[in-house]
Length: 96
Length: 372
Image 1 (cartoon, each protein chain N blue to C red):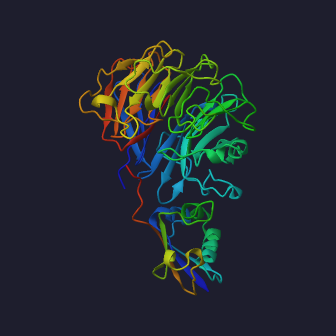
Image 2: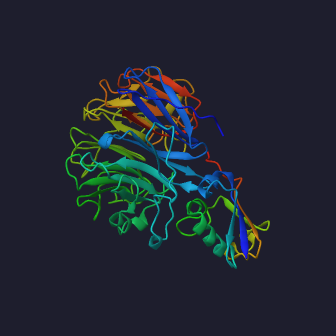
Image 3: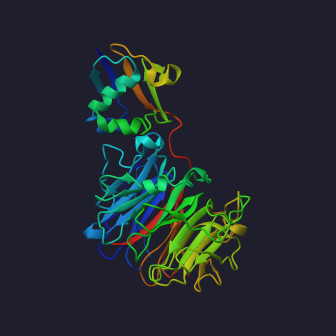
């Protein structure tokens, strides 16, 4: 079983210059799949989640096209071959 | 991404570190301080509230705390004036899991004393102090402040609940002061293990008790290097001086158009001389009468004189934030400040005359200076 993460341009250098990272394992949720990603690409973790373990407020995570905000958050299910997009939200960019 | 240019400071040059809402810039000039070159933007799109220059132990290291709205905040350094920057794998300033807190903003970076060249301090939002003893490789929360029983009663100001000022006592290695908006000023005499409020005489217009033990919205505090008992404090309302190392404060808002403001700096050699930029309070927070004026005292606050030669005096509704004013160590002192409208003004004669070095930067949040 594997889950495929598509890495945004801003984080690719931190993921070994990869735009796609395939993690092997049997994650049942996106939270478990992210843990596998952190093991593969530890530098990506702190850019995507806070030290509280929350997804940063201006990051959207899509599993097979569905935003996890609408699908149970970090408990959202993933399956074999799921494609996960980590995307900066359009709300980003410093104000002022 | 924007094209980034660089500067190459030479020995004796003056460097300005300019943090903005959209990235950082590094400017240089010779000691004449007339013609400025600028490098940047670095970290385009990130707000840079904190920058510092560390010249201890032979370093030429710039520190910056860029905060990406997407990817969060962390500390990064450059040893070549911005050409290259570190990008640590792990966020270097993080709250321990046990606190339940998450870093929102890095507000201040302060190199430690010369005698402890590997020590640095960092003030953040939510209001907390971090310390590093290994050149900034690892950082630890200062528990004595975080667990202070008064901390839960601190309230956020307009900029958030931030620890924005760090003052290392020049004479006592175990004494340090910090200021929090809105918690007030706190001092430790035991290296950070215990802290006590230090706000006697500083008013809090927004509280039922106008002179509480703590809870003041202190905007900036400055301490004289040559006479450490002399301090100035710019409050949310109120302009103060202390001659007993902050144990008590006296109102010195004599002849200023407003006692509200953010920025404050003290002369590196003359403890009677300080600069402020008064703003109309409270919601407007722009320079009074549409005139951009820096005010200077040379008699410890008995009088303040407006400095406007070279500054716009017509329709100039500007805002200068708490870290956006800096003074260099040359004689006469160079004074520098940036505005929220992206202008950066410089003076090579202690504020007597001013020039607009840059116009069109993103909103300026912080200005720091150093002699290379």
